[in-house]
Length: 431
Image 1 (cartoon, one colour):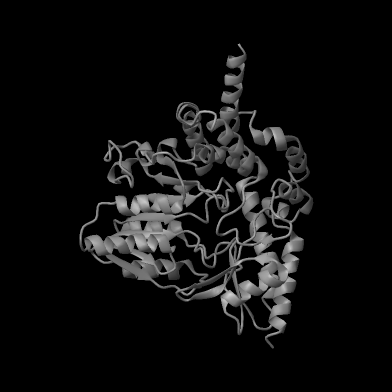
Image 2: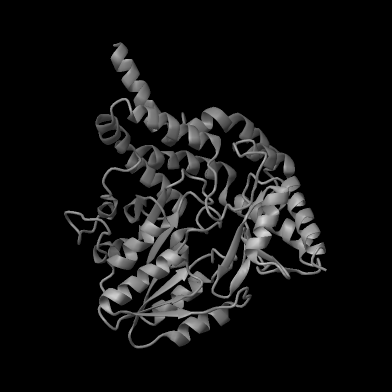
């Protein structure tokens, strides 16, 4: 009986993220409900400035108070409940890995798939769980049937891992890879759509789009681009690494054919978690990146034959989705956009300072680029960290040269005030 009781308790640990007994509910339900009641009549835009509410969210993270982390565009920290879920499941796994991982914890993948599908607004049969956007998108890029001369159109501002994947297909198979070069920010949808449309040739088969350009935060009009591409008989692949968990949308809203994302960015899932979405009727067209016994099958799970991987990290995603749902996607989007504008509006008129990102909500949200005349991005990045302990990242990529600043829901206004002061002081020395 004692062994049975312990076994049931362990099973409860697994099912927790998908039940009323989730770790999130155990830790946060009461305080979060109380905070949400106070803003229930506020619109997401109005709620974005309610510091009492967001202070409750901020307390859910374990970030180092001695470091102001404004590089959440690279990878975001997980809230405490997500960390604890992974730690508990990791200890559970190590009681007998081949049994508890493969026979017990792995049974949680289907509930997780359903939970992600609800968040993404799609069928669970279109969702594969993997480790990051690179893996998800490389699965599509290398899985598409293409022959020498077939063309794909992307941009020079896409993420390097995906650019290199296309270039590898160029070298191995002779496909044609055309890269458009945009000077962002651009606040005109038609300018972007027209540029892609003009690049299409009779041999073009695919258009590759980055939903949010990771260097400076430009939001592309993906739906309009997809509609244009489909009118021309093309398929569309979307890199949603920086948009999923940040912007309030459902994947089918984009009208794309293939979509990959990292969940360890704005969703704040465990580090090393990602997701692939493919329209159900197109799954059989894509070869798995890693071998499968039915590579031409129609089951989305053929993309999950990754061998041994971290089951605790995978299952920790469930608590991150709980965290996201408790805030609300639109409320979260408006808060992070507010934080971005909070600091950027304060520095844009400082002499020698340039903002490289739009202030219009349809063209930017969290990520914002800033530069100071007479300083390289590396120099500004070092000055912010060495003097003010503000962690950012210097960007030098194609025609982009700036420091990328990316707040998250745990970012406090006092930290952004320190960033503003730092930029003022650094820029004043360049007069």
